[in-house]
Length: 113
Length: 391
Image (cartoon, rainbow over all chains, first blue to last red):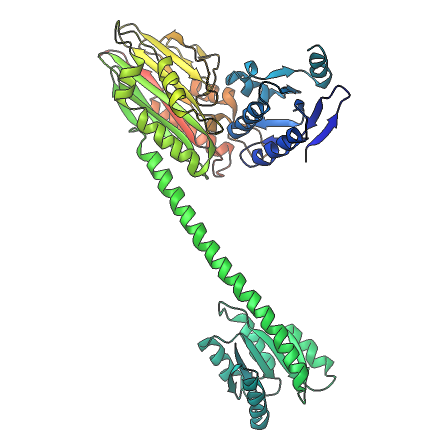
């Protein structure tokens, strides 16, 4: 279950906890996050500090979420562990997603908009 | 519903037969355990009513034997005991009886018990039928997966091919689940070679189908048309990624693939490549140096407006390039640690002076030792490209 915290500035912080986002877990992961989006949250911070691996299906799911949010929504990622950061660099997804060290810096970046 | 009765007393048998027939059961009345077991094996009854005391095989032995026999269906067993025979009931339960009734038989409670048994047996039969359908469906899915896997494998090149001064040696290790690795190499004009490695995201039939479609499309003709500029003949592997991105991208779909396209010009000793999310190949120079090639790049068919880049390196006789899918580096050992690019590089450096097939065998064995022979989670593609010295 993904832990959701609503911040005062209208941003939802999502923490999926310790997991691997793979073919086995990605569909449920995506469904839960899209549930939050459908609940009215369009500014999301996804805290990946507990995620130690993302495979190709997992990356596809993240891009799917980004596309679903569309131009009016906002998604920031933070807390990337090394294997996840390496994967993002290899696939250049670090240019597609907004990536921050932690929730505080991601939230501050949202405030400035 | 069919019922088998076992009782050595002729009078009791007749009474039971009459009562049960009136309740619309098909009854086969037998006079001892052996005859009852034979009737159950031969017919399709799903309820057994048995007395305990019988000559030859008694009721408890009958139940025990019945439970040891695989009839492919469950038989609900009601055992007749004397009044208050708790000891006999205990032994009956141990033997595998489901229910007990005391004699003389009270018709009303017999009817109630039979109805309960019937409900259970109908439920059991439905479950069995569903299970059979599931097994059948599972078999069909397995066959489809096997067909997809062999279609995918049929597209792969021979494991040892020489094209224009390059020797391509490859190995493909399929994963437990069908997944989507594909690679190939061809001559794309005078003194030029094109090659690619691709890995479709996800597993199963969808990934394998996409891999097969990609394998068919990325043909020698396609490469020759796309990767070589028509006007001045320069190499442009990026165009392969551009065209494949346009062809394979579909809004709302999440199947995409990582790709490495390389083109080698023998006369210029150069390799021009486009890396699209595929792992960085390892270059082992004839000077003894080893390094990874490429800075990464967006995968193909993930984004409609993806931008692909080209890079270029010297690739002269004596140089070796090792192309591998992430199934190699992500193969995990028992404690979840991935094999990793550094281990791959170190293995390939050790085998630098060996024939390519020997180096591939060595690495394959190291991988198997790392995963302790467990089936691979993801397809493994390994291609060694040697620039050979002119004869």
